Length: 414
Image (spheres, helix red, strand yellow):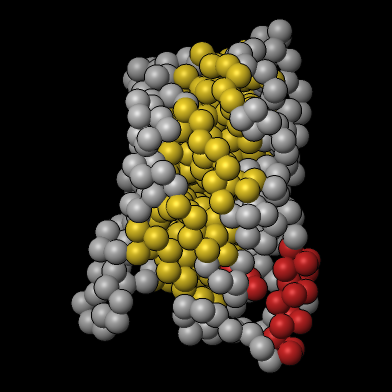
């Protein structure tokens, strides 16, 4: 999980939404929308939840942040698993691993859904782009272009077609482009390394050798450094490998906790938060001064105890708190970003198995995708209490009683 946050085009999307509502010509192609008052454009924020449907097509739920209402439910392809916004764009892309497609649409403008076909067998698992001209799709399966490895496909935003497919390593799981036009770093879990993809080629320009068992990748808030989380043997502490953006080798490493699994860059505080699922902690780093030749190359500010098996972390944009989703204890830990003290624990519904956590740009809400209950839990940050649980769509359309729900897998906010 890199949590890549959409910060561009907020004012534009809100202005167009309000304008369309005023003209009385607003509709959505799939669901019956419930439109809440838009308020001032700068206060309009949304959460987009991808849900996976084992019985058919997945979905994207669009939630209004201020009113906690479901604005729309849009059907995607089979095996919906990941989503991404290109930088400075209103278009949302969703990877559908079950039918080798990517869905693209303009959710806040009720745009038509375009289905982009990948090569058969591709099984896309991740999407990422720091620019607005292309979207990069990471394919874990074998296809005709890359019969023995995974691959990365490039979708041109102007035509919504695949322009190239380039072979990477085995069992790629996630990727990152930190700056527009820059290299795309692709984590190959089976190979224990990172493929470095140059979109201008398009070609692989190098393979970054990391510490054993790389599991996640993220970047510094200023986009200058690439961070690779490695678990090692899974019993002893892992390491955070540090590479300069644009290079193909690791420059330095700093210690993490046991079984690190997710990293979140905090631009407000110039920090990196890393959840360590094996020892129930969060490592907090100062990213404002990274010096590969120093020891350590990056200062550790704190190691914070949280709930059992944290799997994700998010920090509020206003710099006040950070939150961890804890898979085994089925709750969320609230931590002061000033003192690094755990302040409270927010219990999730019985049977919870959270898999993703995100906060909205206004710092008013935190969203937790919960596969255990098939719900999205919404935490109100003003008092750090659970304000609402929003159920995912049913697996079978039209089901009205004892309905199995789809599984929320990812949340993005803007």
